[in-house]
Image (tube, rainbow over all chains, first blue to last red; front, side, top):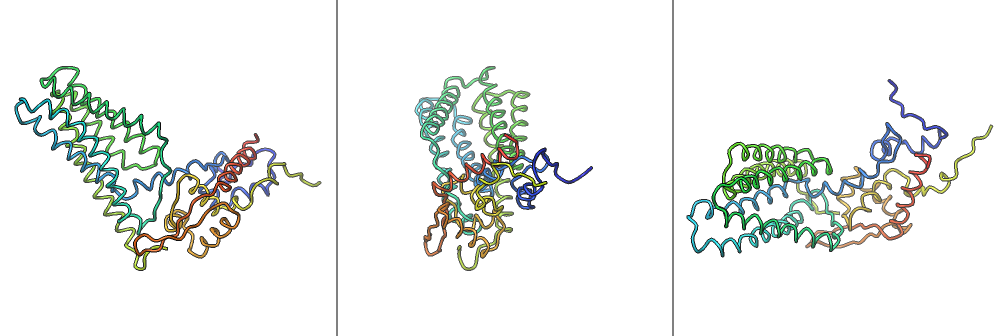
Length: 243
Length: 102
């Protein structure tokens, strides 16, 4: 089998030399089909956010906060405190998620930027931001409402935690493929296992969510810690500051 | 017999077509701004080589270079200019047309 790139019909050799120099061929061109693959190059900055393990570490911390918030629902008998607590819970969930994002940015400025450089992403479109905030708020309110109003096991609430696990798994899988970051496959696999376990051994919603976020939080913290250590080992602190 | 070059080849922007500069412009086209260190790590170029390419791109008006400080640390911040964005988009279209025969 020839390793030479196929010559498209009608293209003179000098154009092939021009377009298939080694760096160009390796980084930009899909040599097997002679198509420019600048899309893959353009996606490289997306990997910056996940290059150091900090997002996993902070996400694990956010999930640990959610687990702590679910402890009273799990272990304290329901009473007059349940409704106001249920109203406050979605706010805590959202605030911790937004605070987590802010904290990752702060950590990146201190830890990642001096070692691996710095990127500022383009701001997302306002419409997309509002939509995702509304969807996340709606989902948080709906799930907490179910926890408060239907604390006993029922088929619909039993499935909610499992469905959440499968949705999270799909998100991790998409991130692994889109950002070419295979470590997200671990999180996807754990989410699937937890989802299957929640179907096999059904519990009420708050217990299911408690177990889901506790397991995923633990895996995220572990994964983040391993990746951060590896990043720090590969990128020692510069002696004389950045360029 | 002389070989006649296809039309789009003569229109290709040689400044962007150079592999290292193409990589720099492709990355900068996707972000608001990036610093020198990040671009250096992504391209694998030496400081001197990278500075030379950045200088050419800046002179052509394709990128903007800003010297700044984060605390006491000096930073070189790079961002693609409007002209660079247009040139990169045109380059992608031309190369697509050339290689795909469109």
